[in-house]
View 1 (cartoon, rainbow, N blue to C red):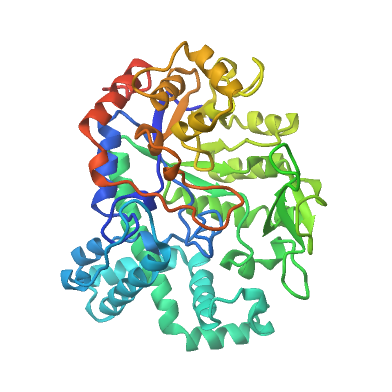
View 2 (view 1 turned 135 degrees about the vertical axis):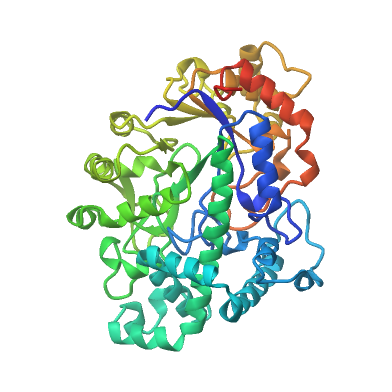
Length: 502
């Protein structure tokens, strides 16, 4: 649906300052929201919030519906009486400008396990009631997720399709036995989900009370090694014997890659999903709308047609396009849940059919300024070609920062940009593109915090198709200055994107 003229900032919570080595939902998260409010921003966009596996990618999560326990604030656990300040006495010196996941994970998990053990005997009646209410209302995904993670730990992290056949195939007697044997581990995984969503809910309420909506991110596919695939094998294209992905997701060869991208996720059995009235997807949307206000759908084009690559292939070359029931799907979503606040990530190979699906349901598409200056005046990423019902970005988490992009752009792109702008301002190229985004006719403008700060590519969040060194960037608390807030406020008001009463 079209949105009012407005703007916001893209920042993943792991990038917050914190003495625990990774951004969390504590004080600095609230300081960031204050910065947004003072800057007249109305949106905070985040990446997927699920628990991550190898590579730490938010787009490859162990669950489509769970939260990332590494973002739980230990200091808020002290406020709850579940930890004491002395528990933080031997913290190492974490890097201030990035997340060292290997260093962070064991320390954070030890604190969470200690909090869980303290919760069992010392939780108040109010805390116990809140925990049981959470477990009951989220049981449709929480029970499978907690058992899945407990089993995964018991198998030293091995993928579910390599477990004993009776567990991989979810035989009821085997599952009942393991639920009994792993009761303590299952409780722990439920507890940390309770804590994540309790802290997130408080943060979201604070955002909403201050006029800020949260834009969440829903990857179209889920990881093969996830509670979702293990618990719902009938809706994924799996090898019936081994449980491996029989048809893998990806994108075909293009200008950027001669072999395409092979992601490895199993594609959906859309015919089976449609028979079930898309129930799993409905639950997924409902779960997400519990903790965000607007949903950005990653790889939206996969709802019209998706690239399917047979098992055993090492590249995406030998895949094929398969039609998906996008219209029927979004009609059911609309019928069951109402007109949803959805943004469509429509980058890449976009056909008229994909555009028609997007426009039929009035979903805003994405426009990225960095893509606008490498071709001719017909380029859809040039601001004068935008429709109003769109979201403009200077760049995304998958791109260079604006400063990094400009420093490495070819002469043709630089010349086109300079002709378009007239000149580079003394404030820097990042502020020129921020102005360009805010001044465009697109209803929404989202700016990565790295561009507000004018950082180079050392602050880039992700390099697609590289397995390591991503998702690590963090900022330091002192960079969110009043001067920076005032500059954003002035531009946001100038270009008609400020809140109505400001």
